[in-house]
Length: 309
Image 1 (tube, one colour):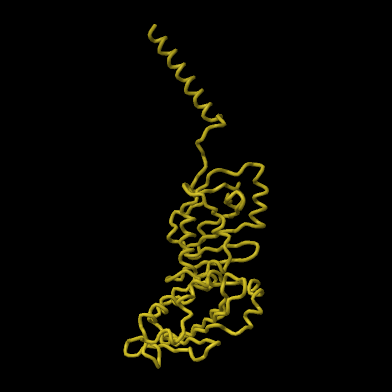
Image 2 (cartoon, one colour; image 1 turned 135 degrees about the horizontal axis):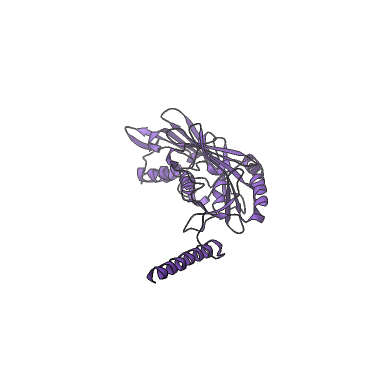
């Protein structure tokens, strides 16, 4: 009798387990996901020393030369490199794109997306497509030949695709003089509107001062710190420069020339603020840049300003 009851209980238990399993599998509200969240992540991310971003418009190569990151041969913005690697590290696959979306997403990858290739030396470690829906702030990644995935950074509402869609010039370091001013040999500042206010500064007996006057070194230190922290908001492309063609033909408001201890020269020409414009335009060597005028308050300083009183 007891044996019969045990058999009945065992059968009942088996049926219950099967029923629960079927409900779990076929329940449309099941929140568990079989998606591999790490499908786009790189296990040894710190070993990646080259990232190539290829769109239908341009190719951007970010490369570590053993000392610093470069973008197409120019110094890269260290903060943006940190953002890039933080994005690669934290982005997770949330779910596969719906079946009706997949073909259109593949087209968007090719037309407006970015193909991201991560290398360790010459070895390709990870390659995927990135495209984002700006209006919805949604980003989709896709591996070649596979269904795209909606991706997220858990805990943050960020538009991931915008990182990979940055243009070449956006990746460049916007700091206009990217070295320590203690390593300079001399500095010359010229004003086209008042030549008498031009000045030259250099080291004499270990003290950096303006030649020909007793220098208020505190004021000069503030000037130099502001100059060497000066950052452009944007490095303009050839197409963007065209709208400033007439401005670049005008007299320069202030010209700064620096010679470092290796006798290399760095030039910065600052043009007058255009009427109705919120940005100053300057030319740093061969680059034309836009600068926030507020950053130049300590840099538009004449010779008389530095005289010790």
